[in-house]
Amino acid sequence: MADRNALNLRWTFGFNMDSEAGTLVDLTADGRRAVFFAVGHTGVIFDYEVRQQRLLQGHTNTISCAAASDDKKWLTTGDIGEKDTMIVVWNARTGVPVRTIFDAHPGGIICLDMTPDAMYIAALGAGPVQNLSVWEWTVQKDDPVASSEITTRDLQHCVRFRRDEKAELVTNGVNRTIFWNWEASGLKYYSPAISSKEFLTPIGRFTQSVFIPNSTQAVTATEDGDLLLWDHVLLPALHARPTDRCAVKLLRLHDGNAITVVQVFDNFLVTAATDGFVRFYDFKFRLLAWYEDLDVGPITALTFTSPRSIAKDGSQLDAKVRVPNFVIASKSGKIALVNAAVFDYFTKEERRGELLVQAF
Image 1 (cartoon, helix red, strand yellow):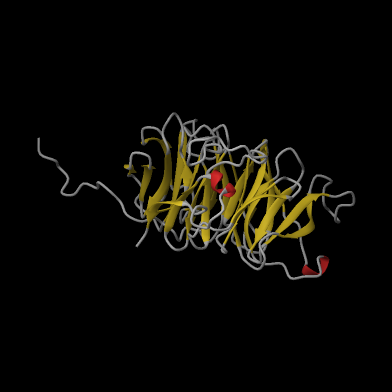
Image 2 (tube, one colour):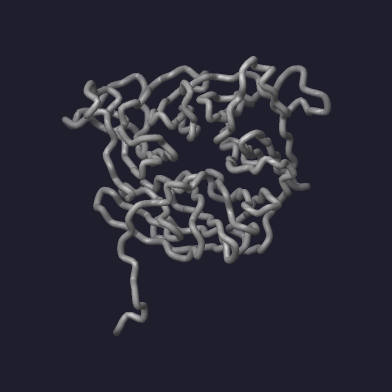
């Protein structure tokens, strides 16, 4: 039987490297070594061990963001455009769409996140009137379970669930960080005011935020290479609740280079920056491991894959700090796999990442 389509997409080249939220998501599970990224309005699940692409088609606008559940069974994607925008939840193993939310926000989605158990999706709208919404995607309802307009003029571009308490979320724009609490009555928020006078130094534009697990702390990364630490204080500001967070410390982690990625994985706080470095810290901000010879250029996205692997000679490396392998994307159009074992090698050539994708 003749194919009804004049053209069938078989392979893609490059990826959406200008996406601010990032579309790089590891999908390594069940014996498959794969990573997701977006090319225009097409999603790609790339099995880099066997060099095969599974193409996810359905979006009619450029895919702007993506996230996955902890077990890598479910993948969600969002797009940005003037019309026909959508959030799609895919079976990450088969590439089959299982739920589509049409016109979730006017103008599309800037950033989204999924709870570790895959039950809920949080999405930041891209329209002129910005909203934060939480969707229970497994329930066939047309409306989110919670939604709130964001009244600040600072466009929020990052959203993260608190991993150990999904009723809490954090968002940030370039100037403000907002802490959200999702209750039966809806989304409530608190945006602590900060001033450079508090830290005797200018505070750079914000990039990403994340909660520190099993604590009351959170951090926001800046373009100056700092982390702004948030925590509960004994004497909260006027009109603030005791549970509200305030900026308590400014930490310099990447000297003069923008921290583009800040994430938590297991017991590590991980940063990546425009200097091309990836650094692993404990939750007391003590440096544990660093990768500074990856040779990919300014890093824009990072995702974690399998645990620490074996050395080139097949032996298991015995190290005090067993960091995970990870995949990075850069502004120079590269996606590279980094075996954490290269931390123990001596030459720059050995400490580089393995190139998976090269954009034009």
